[in-house]
Image (cartoon, rainbow over all chains, first blue to last red):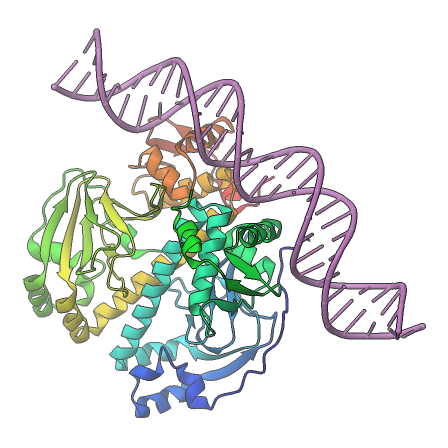
Length: 242
Length: 242
DNA sequence: CGGTCACTTGATCGTCTTCAATACCAGTGG
DNA sequence: CCACTGGTATTGAAGACGATCAAGTGACCG
């Protein structure tokens, strides 16, 4: 069995929000739904928790429910029979998983740290969407954004060098960070980064070191880094470097 | 199974359908829209044609309109400043382009053969979607399916070998073909295939030859091929080959 | 015919992978 | 307190796969 798999890194305390909050997941549902409807939605939703390292969606399973992530980070990935793994994205609070039309999930989802989510049975959700056009619009927006991100990632995987991939990765992650944009933490192990960028762990390590040596970033902890030269990084990530 | 692939994407006679047909693009809009509304939609839509080789959507431009492809095939792609290109997908009749939320198109679209489409101004479309929840649902389905395809492509680009990529490509294209599933035509040049699979033209050629030599496919014309051993091909594409 | 353009083939090269060894760090129990 | 262990990170050396460079073929067209 190859070492492609998983890992349970550090855990987070993760407060459990009240049901109505859990239900909406802020970004995606709440804003669009009137109080009354929200309560109705809450009736058919079931909250859940996935502890670090555990799987909560498995590729190929019947897509019986739609997941609304409320906190934590999950890796979304696809596997090849021999164990090769491609991480297609990461899901944070506000992400919606399980939009499949095919009837089965198109990817697996595993918790990196503690993930809290909310399951909507798909059948009941369908009726609800009909009553709430605004929600449908929200879902469409979300799917569109994801699609754009996926296309960007295809460009990365198909045409960028290892150094360019790493630069792109660091930059996008820094924009998502809540701290100062120049210093941030990635709660992802080397293996996750590798499988996200279509590289091996060794290449990730070496590339990271090269970026450090050329003064673009600084790596304190294995998972904490500081951006030193954003311009060069940007240039490298866009493929306009020498 | 993607709904927009059932249509004849390769009409060489290019019959120009009446406006109402052009407007709806059958599978995506028409079915969901009552006659009366359809007529209203027609008012704000503008039909158009892109001749082979021309660009009709350019990445980064303000996304002023939504495109509904009615016939022909387009390549959707992203470019790096130095000219590297990644084709993120192909659009056939029934495809919807321009779902961007960011306000600008996320990719460029160029016609491979003659493409007929219909432009909806985004502002007017927004109001229309509000009136027609069914259409919104259609768009969501479309986006979801595209997203699943994009994830599959990420797996291909990030983790599959050249041979595996080519096998996957041949198989998916054969499923979309309208002829006998074993013999089909790809209206795509080597360069398009290469940029879609994240390879070079030379590698595409060599890989194709290897598949031919091992008896999995037969290449008659440069763009016409016959599948000889679907099982082995499937095995190779899934990564379960020796 | 000369021209272009796409495709094909061959030889060489570089990047990333693979394989293997070592360092590191937290937790555990002697 | 300190070996011991399991999992992760790092480093080094060798090899493979696909890219690059270069040349040759064939089809189409003025």
